[in-house]
Image (cartoon, rainbow, N blue to C red):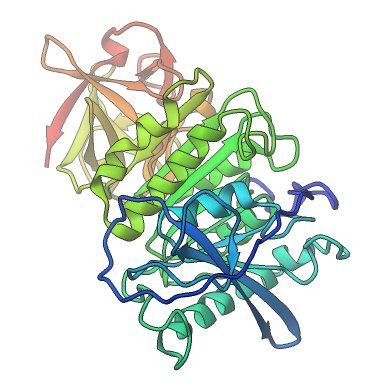
Length: 443
């Protein structure tokens, strides 16, 4: 990866929020156990506080959860938990925040049937010194893992109101904004937690290479004009992760407007909650609503998603009509693709992955990397990516003469073997001619 992940965030910038919401009164009466299922109703919210720690780090954690009572009010302290068995979805606040200030993202999860442990980080919450190095050194990601462990343990703790009420088999969700989003992404990369099945990093930066031990559905949410956590860094993080994954872009906005009650807030919350419903309740109807959630009643969002792991495809080679030479992932894939070989070997073989809607990806057999229209198509094609995003997606065009052409999603231009095939392949032509036409050879 070319981007330095540690240069994006300045002290005092990420996720500074203030408003605190009152909890309200204590309630009574207990509920009986019901089997876990995707709830169809909205719940009232309860909250309980736990004085946990990890070593010398105090981890005061407030757990918000579905409660008995009338939906729509403030969280009720120590309210009886609602009937059911509920999955866990942790939430990490941003710099200068706390669980209450992130009520617009915490409460909808609890109302939808999730148990939401929300730690108060000891050095980045409201009233603290704001030590952002506790994200870069992994402390906050490791704090979250401790909170997850402690929350899961409540399911078998005698006398706990959560005993027998937590889904401990599906995996857990994690989410967070800004510094909390970076904490969340850290759990998928540098400080992995294999229990995570779903993640939503809001306004994060790329915290490292994806871990092979975490198999999570990951939704990124970001404003493309974010002045604090660079949009390009989140895009890099998205490109590196395997499917299932999605990216909700709020166009023309910055760091946090879409979180609060204004700009695209409805789209943000609907997409985020349905992502968790699909991932942790196996709610396929929620999965099928995601695009509508993200794009309805707004003209300023972009939705991208690869919701199923990529299938394997047939092995093919490409022969350029510009010079009748085979396309090669030169230097075992370390150099750009070029049509300069007279015979087929490992460097000239690619897996052709069908992405649907006439789109394909090419994975070089020589290094197992996906072919990328580098730099949004401005640079030559090269097999250097571990996952498929827009730069690795090509529309397959079947030509009348039996050849195919490839149009890069990165810039909507056709891949060409320029200068009669002596130049590296690049997505640089608006029309199809011999230099943009390739014979597809199986095997």
